[in-house]
Every structure is written in structure tokens, then in C-alpha cells.
Amino acid sequence: MFNDAEDQLEDLGPLKVLRVQGDPDAPTIVLFHGYGASAFDLYPIHDVLTTEQKFNWVFPHGHLSIPLMPGYNGRAWFPIDMAALEEAIRKNDFRNFADRDPEGLDIARHASILMLESLGVPWNQLILGGFSQGAMLSTDLVLRNEQNPKGLMILSGTLLNETLWTDLAPKKSNLRFLQSHGEMDPILGYANAKKLEKLFRNAGLLGEFVSFPGGHEIPNVVIQAMSRYLNQLS
Image (cartoon, rainbow, N blue to C red):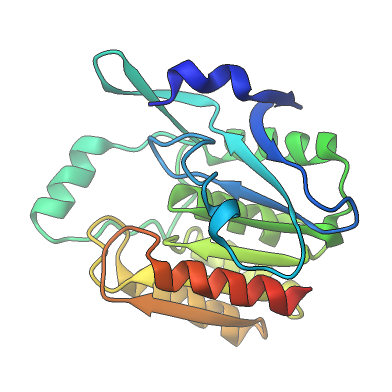
């Protein structure tokens, strides 16, 4: 819904991104937005966190254009069957992605890897994260990469490809993560978020799970947790 502001984006590899320059010696945080949003959706977060370091920020812009309403498009990382999702919400039957990769995730992953390579920041100075399908993408990128990033923030994400992730997670046993999820999330169920946390903890990862009495959102308690987490990584 930010079609008129896309001239503020810059090319980074095959993707467009919104960037915020901080301390050149500080880590870089890369936050992937959710379905139907844009690089501008998570951008305000950088201005409301209370952190000791002035981090560098990269907000990637999804490569897929998604019609939202006449004259307005959002962006996405991979397609969603909206009819099936609406039916699941109506029946209170949360969709389970845990047995597979969503169609199109491989394309998003490849584009994101090229973007990160173009960024040129050492992997151990990257903090990856995202919201909703952006959280799924960032988690998948971290687990599949041979190196550990400095951190991982999973905001209202979920478990994908459980067999593969269970196999990969022990290789990330020193990774410190932050995960948040609404207890009444009508889009990505709370139970699968807790399954992802359990998978991580069983693999030896260290982290914090922040639950809140809400839905598919980033409330202030999560903003506070992000500030706390980033200060711990400093």
C-alpha cells in the first residue's frame, strides 16, 4: 500500500530494500515483512527500540506484488491460498505448514541470499528476523546457512518443514534467538509456534519466547523484548 513511496527504495542484489545507516561498526539487522505488507511496514521499529548500539537496518521489499484493493498492492515472499486461509479462520482450524516448504519459498530464499551477499556484511554481524511469513523466511535462511548469524528474531512465525528443520537446528546450538507470538493468533496458530520453540530448545539453542494475549501483531511488549534482546547481543 506504499506504491507512491517506492522511489525511496534502493536495489540490493535482486531485491529492493529500505536502509537505515547506523554505526559502521555495529551489526546489521535485516527484517523481512509479512504477507501483503512492504519494506515500509516494519521500518518504524528501528525508531522505537531502546538500544545501546546504533544498529544498521535493512528492510527488504518482497519480490511478489499482491493486489490488496483497487489501486493498492502489497508485497509478499511467497503466495498464500487466501481462500483456504479465510476458510481456516472461519472454522478456527489453524493451517499447519509444518510438513513442507510453502510453494515459492525456494525462490524467496535464493533472492534473499543474493541480497545478503550484495550487502557484504559478515554473517556473524547479521541479525536476521521478520514478521509472519518474513519470520518463516528468515528462520529458514538461518537454519540452512552453514554459519551462525549474530541473532534471529521470529515475530509471529511458525514451524515449516519440520523434518528438515529438526535435522538442521542442532548445528545452530550456540545461536541466541527471540521468538514472539500471540496466544489468540487467528492466522498462524500459537501451538505451532510453541512447537518451533521446543524444536529449538531440544537442539540446544538459547532464547526467549514472548507470548502475549493478542493476535497476529507486534505489541509493545514485543518491542520491549526486542530492545532487551538486542542489548544482550551487544
